[in-house]
Length: 353
Image 1 (spheres, helix red, strand yellow):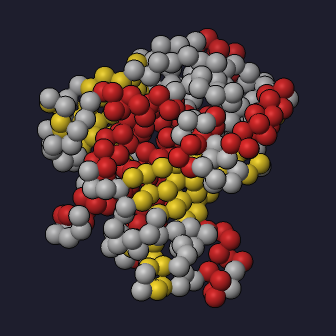
Image 2 (cartoon, rainbow, N blue to C red; image 1 turned 90 degrees about the vertical axis):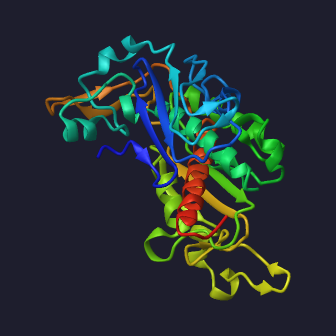
């Protein structure tokens, strides 16, 4: 086991490193007959590729996807869907001067301890570039879910400690940072400029919403839908916390405030985030992921070298100021993969959609 496969019935296996030849993946379990082509996958990849926002790295990658199998005449065949994305702008020489020291906040130290060897060029499999394959696989899941009337949307709810109201979620898809409030964009741009000028980085909060999910999806006890979603979102390297519905705020409410009243017309509120007892209620599913600041910063930090000796490091190079907004389509993909998997697991048991 090396943790490169996600899902049970709808499975995504990924491969590749940040500074290798490229990245790719295989989707197993996708039903036949789903509309699919490179353009559909490319549309999702274009939302996460570098260079698309003021917070983005200067690294230039077209992230052009190539489908190798599992699709014929614009439809999935039911067999394994293989795809690749080539790397074009690696510049691995940027990392040669720090190859013998561990970068604080990165997986350098833990990879070295676990495997006894590591790819120091951008972090290898621990790099955020690994998420290219997740977005591509998630695009397949999104098309499958679309045919079932299930839609998944994602946007940035907070950047660098500055929150944005969900005033225009649809408009967020074409707005800088995937910001849902046009009035917050200028404040976010100012925070990014400040962090960049100080050689620092910013974290953020991403909200993912899934609509059209029927009631009854998910299993009691260990395979709760919210547990599977949390597992999926926490599997993204920069995510340090996940909440469903009112989340952390629920711990500070009375039961009378947090409970969602049920009326003949449906639920009167959605503090549960669309999941009760680990099973979908038919309401919109709401999840939030808390993303740490990018650890590669242009400021001197204390660390040790591979021999355990004290050292200092200034990572420099071409790095995002924040994982926001590029992580937004990644988390959207992970929710889509989770829902597709749970739908197919339900079908195996002879129920569901």
